[in-house]
Amino acid sequence: MAILEIIEAPHPVLAAKARPVRDDEFGDALAAHMQDMAETMYAAPGVGLAAPQVGDSRRVIVADPGNDPDEADDERQLYLMVNPVIIERSREMIEGEEQCLSVPEMTVRVRRHRRIVVRWRDPYGAPREEAFEDWAATVLQHELDHLDGTTLYDRASRLKRSRYVKRRKKLVREPLHAR
Ligand SMILES: [Zn+2]
Image (cartoon, rainbow, N blue to C red; front, side, top):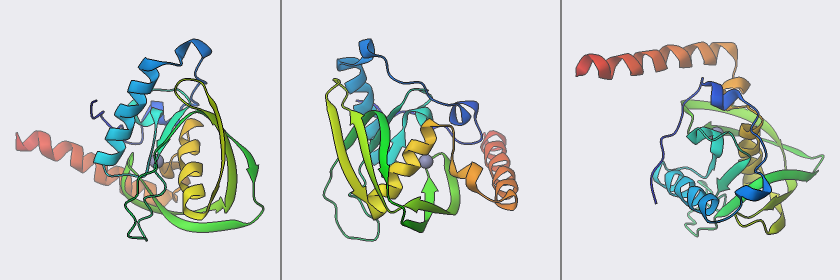
């Protein structure tokens, strides 16, 4: 198990459309990689992480949306999703504030479907399907966005984006000068 480096926006791997995992890629190596992603997510701490955020442009996400920040509920339910697809979306929408491990210190209000049904495969190729609502549905729609190259950075206003870039440049420069 290892903690992976989380890539921050703007970065080409975060903007790219991730490719599907091929049949010959399922198995122990993929499972181990996804456990590393999960460990990285919990350490951050976060409730979801998509493979492009660790530099892997494949359709893979890990999520523990049971970790609702508004509820004192520490029960872990880890989802390891390979090639996830949303097969149903409610017409009803909800809106909430989101943050992203790849876009530090930025909060963006995003509209999401209140309920979705996701179909995916586990790291060994077994098919899975489940419905998610409210916070969990939001977390998964956020992670699925990453697989299509969309981050909160893209959803933010131009003003928020330019403030963010200025702040990041400063943060990157300062540690170098300090050394
Ligand atoms: Zn994110």
